[in-house]
Image 1 (cartoon, one colour):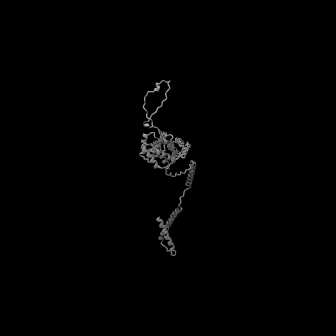
Image 2 (tube, rainbow, N blue to C red; image 1 turned 90 degrees about the vertical axis):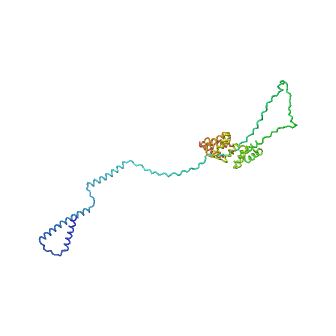
Image 3 (tube, rainbow, N blue to C red; image 1 turned 135 degrees about the horizontal axis):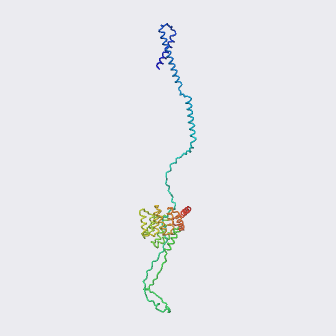
Length: 373
C-alpha cells in the first residue's frame, strides 16, 4: 500500500513539473545522466501503471458490493423454497379439522347466602286454656245403718190369715214436729247457662252467670275458671291472673291454675320441672299435658310438644283446642297426612267457633294439605 502511495506522489510531482516547466528550455545532458533519467522514468511509469491497476481493481470490488451466486446454486435454492412451501400446504390439508373453540365465560361470583325468614306453614297455636264444663255435684253417700234383728209377727202368723192394717206414729219430744225440706240446686243450672253462653261467644251473659254463681258460692271453682277464661279472651291478663291465683289459694295443686299461670310467667329453668312434678302427682290431668306441650312449642321442640299434645288429646278427645294444637305440631314435623286429619277433626268439634283458633286459617291449611297428596 505504501508503494502505491509513493507512486501516486511521484506521478503528481511529474505533472507539476510538466506544467510548471513548459516554458523552460531543455539543455543537453550528458549521456550518462540521460540514460539514468530514462531508466528512472521507465521505472516510475511501470510503478504508476501497477498502482492504477491495483486501485481500479479495488474500486471495482467495492462498487459491486452484492453477493453473486452461480446459476446452479440459485436454481437449487429456488427449488428448495418452493418444495418447502408445497410440503407445508400438503401437511395442512391432511390435518383433521380443528374443533371450534368454545369461549368459556366465567360465571359471576355467587351472591352472598342470606337466610330468609321462613313463615310457619302451620297456623298459630292456641295457648290459653278454655273453661271446663261444670261438673255435677255428687251427693255424699249415706252412712250404713247397723242391722237390727227383730221378731216379725207376720212370719209367725198363718199364711192364710189376713194382715191387719197398722199405723206408725213417731211423736216428737216436746210436741215439736220435724220436717225435712230439700232445697233445689240452683248453682248447677246457672253454671250450665254461663258455660253455654261462653261457647256461643256471648261473654257478657257468661260473665253475669258466673258472677251470680260466685255470689252464692264464692269458692266455686267452675265460676272462677270461667271468669279467668273470659278475661283471657278479652286480653285482660291481670284480671285472669287474679282469678287463677284465687284458685291456687283454694287448692295449691290446682292443675289448670298452675298450667295457666306458666303462660304468663314462663321461666326456662323452673317451668318444665314444675309441670313435670305436677304431672307426676296428677298424670291424668289433660290440662297439665297441654301446658307442658305449650312450653315445648315455645322453644320449638316440636317432637316433645307433639307427644304432650297427643296425651292431652287422648285424655280429652272432645276438646277442639287440644285437637287443633296437636294438628299444628304434626304440621311442623312434616306429618301432613296426620295433620290434615286432626285439622278436620278440630273443625268438626268446634261447632261454635269459640275455641280460640281461626277457622278460616285452619280450613285453608287443610285444603293445602289435602291438595298436596
